[in-house]
Length: 245
Image (tube, rainbow, N blue to C red):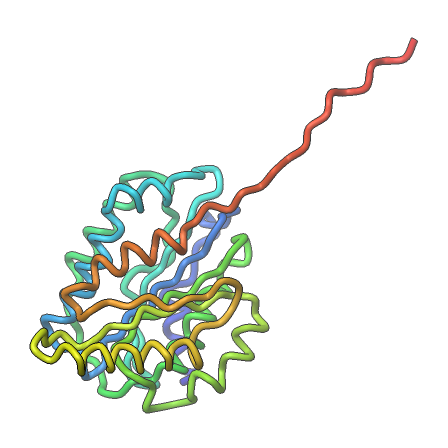
């Protein structure tokens, strides 16, 4: 675990030129465990690309160019298997969004180990977010289609993550088969309850659901819009006092 995290942090370490104030550091953790096949993998990455390309998401991302959003994306599966898809990138122009979208479209699936180490994925996301102390808000967005079955349980790492001050949101992905409606709804409900009880943490944390990977783009769009709600600051200005004679 330590070796895997060390490798990821080395790959994603921001450069000195990236150091600047930002309003939100957002890390997306994508589930590529054995339950995710090649088609579902492509739907997941294409779904993130489509969500970032949505006009309303672009508008929110670029709403405060003086204090932009920093975004990074990583994949996770077994306890020692995580990989960076997109190192930390400052989003301050449409061109930067276009670059991320193209990166996602060009990414090909690597060989990933089986297993669902959700607790480790949360710890890795926390470590990534710790690289952006300059950001006002830190959000980890974890997607998953199953419960953790390897490594520390999410419930065992939640206190540590909560103490760090980050928010963890969940995107639960249900099974795709449209012919088993009642079973699918029950499965999504059970997994959503698991994420609420054991995974999400922090101020205003929430769980969003996708009705299968075919619904991933819509769900991710709605999730990003909720996560990117602008931070509002008020500043009181006063006229300078008149000069005394």
